[in-house]
Image 1 (cartoon, rainbow, N blue to C red):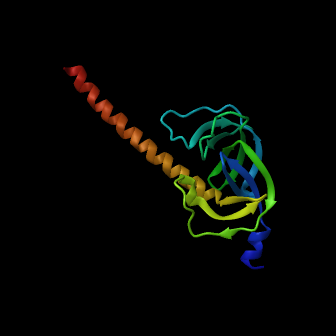
Image 2: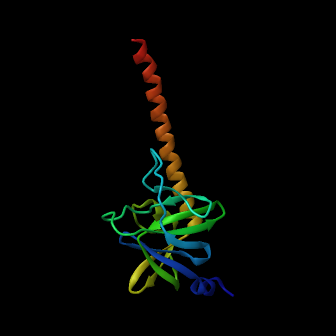
Length: 168
């Protein structure tokens, strides 16, 4: 079997983040469920919506785009990957679909997740961006690490200033 026929027969979980429609391989989706209460992480990048406790496991929950108005019931797509389980926050789930993917070399967007886009497909007259989950996870992880390094640097600068203020 050639790779193009394998790709066209693969099923994808289609979902929306704000106004952008995305899809990830159904093979990487563990489940879709209502979002449990989230614990926010201080100084975390907005990509990390927080941590949640689901089925005796703590999961990092990723938010790809800020929701337009923050209203409505959110859902989570729990993803299984080589790095462990994690979740994507979304407000709208399409369905599991066989999509014919057109692969692209680059996707032009300012969003951090755009580097994880493998290609696009059509779903109910909408363009859907196909996202590779492990690449998306690495991008988010790199962004969070950069953010925390900046926060640590700022905290150490503040800590070095405090003793001099106390001495004077």
